[in-house]
Length: 279
View 1 (spheres, rainbow, N blue to C red):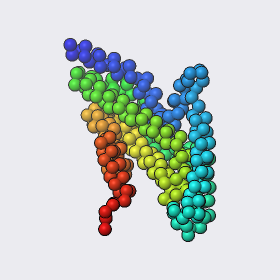
View 2 (cartoon, helix red, strand yellow):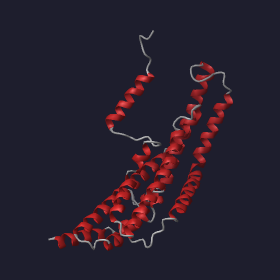
View 3 (tube, rainbow, N blue to C red):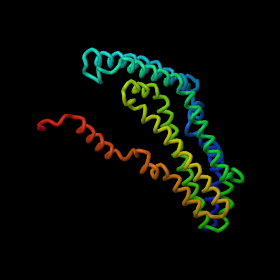
View 4 (cartoon, rainbow, N blue to C red):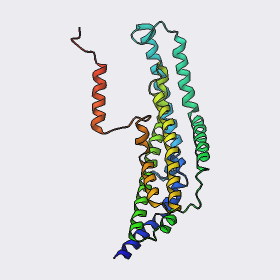
């Protein structure tokens, strides 16, 4: 019975070889350029998804909205004097619009430069955590010589790695949506506080730092496995999975549950609404 269970786990690990090797070899692209994987999906007419066309559509509508918001703010501030500071030089509002247009047009190039910097930073770190070989399924299989205990431990490590892959895919989709929405976020540059644009850039930077930490811990987990420290490898992999939550205590705003989100929204509304009856 024990031998059958070990063999079953062995077959399960062997079946994951293609997924592990293909995904872990391009983790950075999976997060920051996931559209390269999704571009292979076909739509109803048989063509492939064109994310450049989607971005162009969003860009066109964002330009229309930017012009309308610019005109509306100019009228409210300098004609009705209901919004902002009417004493402020109107050229500042025009500068904000120019900055928004520049970001909309040049964001792709700036994003590629940003990803290149992150790639170089990550490579410099991983150069100190070099792994011999890239077949992760084979590495797991080589550590199953201790019977049922090591077989189950290797299965647990594999599951943690798969959870990590799902995390990267989810974060990649979030970043893709944010990249597509950058034209609308750029409209916030018309405001003195830059609107949501600041949070957008902040999230890109924190995602990059979190990814670097997770991939470094992942390589350390694999090194522990290669050197026969299976339990250490599992512990380090679990820490890698929990890295966003760990860093969230200091830098990243956790999304929280639906109930917490509703509570935060209610508190924000109460803070915005005037307090009637206040003397």
